Amino acid sequence: MSEITLSELEKQYGETTAVEDVSVEINDGELLCLLGPSGSGKSTTLRMIAGLETPTDGEISIGEDDVTDRPAYERNTSTVFQDWALFPHKSVLENVAFGLKMRDVPAEEREERARAMLERVQMGSYDDEDPTNLSGGQKQRVALARSLAVNPDVLLLDEPLSNLDKRLREDMQIELREIHEDLEETFVHVTHDQDEAFTLADRIGIMADGNLVQVGSPNEVYENPKNRFIEGFLGDTNFIDGEVDRVTAETVHVETELGREIVLPTDEEPDIDEGAELTLSLRPEILSIDQPVSAQSDGGQTVLADGSTTNAVIGTVENVLYRGSTVRYSVSSNGTTMFVERTGASTDALTAGDDIRIDWNGADVLAFRADGTRVSL
Ligand code: ADP
Image (cartoon, rainbow, N blue to C red; front, side, top):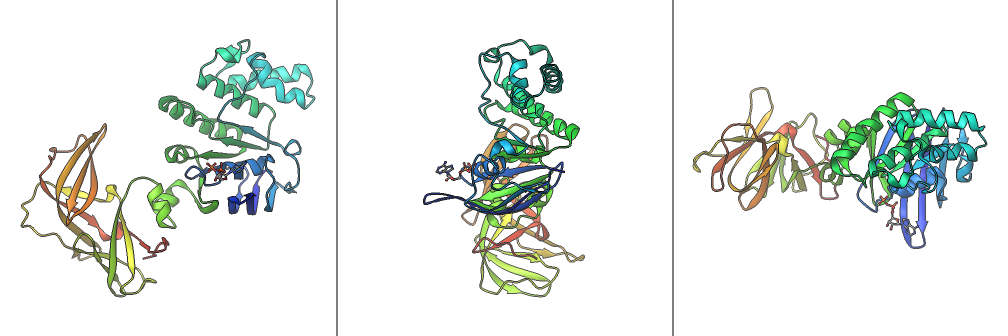
């Protein structure tokens, strides 16, 4: 079994705290993506699992074994790096077989395994090539085959696709996912690209400032972010500032910078006081647009018969941005700019200067306290 347990991992470099507190249990056969902005400690965490860095504090176990103090070569992990680091004067086949040679696997078996791995990454016919003649994508496939050939308990991937162009990167993401499904080994994959994490991961671990802030399925972290940082990091949103005006057993009324009250329905009385500052998140996908309306028609909120709440504002289209399959509009309302999106195919285009009404369901709005923590509603 090759589950990985990280307990209160910490890594200091002199005055710099690269990793402050990382604790997580990674399941056997799971693909966990560590996702976070540059400098958040992802690589350092991965390198500690590999044994390439020694933790300042905390423990690492793989399977039953506490490997915290074991050198890299005594852990059955294999790492794929961003810069594929292939040997230039060895053939592709020799490159893939190299790790097996280091482990004293007999020549015949080495070749057999190396060929099988090259086939697996669709590079079977390149065995005699010099790696310097390969494209970036092909080099990365060979590097992957080399890492997998030694049959590691755990495959560690440190931004392996970030040197590839977009199209190739997307193809490789799908392929990596398939390889993981075939092999059923534990993969830990570091990326700063949220699309990549969403494509690949069974679970995503979100890192910020050396801390593992939340771990969950892609859907969980997107739908149910623990704090404001995660909400802002995972895709675009409109953050609207406001102050709590009134709290009832069923609703929180927030006076906002849109010049309107936004009503959030609650299941139980939330842990928030009147007068508290809140930031509300209105993701573009929860907003719907009503075609040009006259400026006299009124925004405001309506509590529907089933208890759900509809909110609306009137705004003026300021900018129209075509983004391929979608059109993004920036809309000004009470001096605050929000953006809304529509798929390119839908109905009539809006133009700058149009007055529109933006509607949303209050139940789809997330609320964050001034310290960034989420208010559960
Ligand atoms: P990420 O992978 O999320 O981009 P890293 O783990 O590479 O982040 O780095 C986290 C922090 O630790 C950064 O501030 C980085 O500058 C610092 N750091 C990483 N490695 C070293 C090192 N060898 N010496 C000093 N500081 C380091």
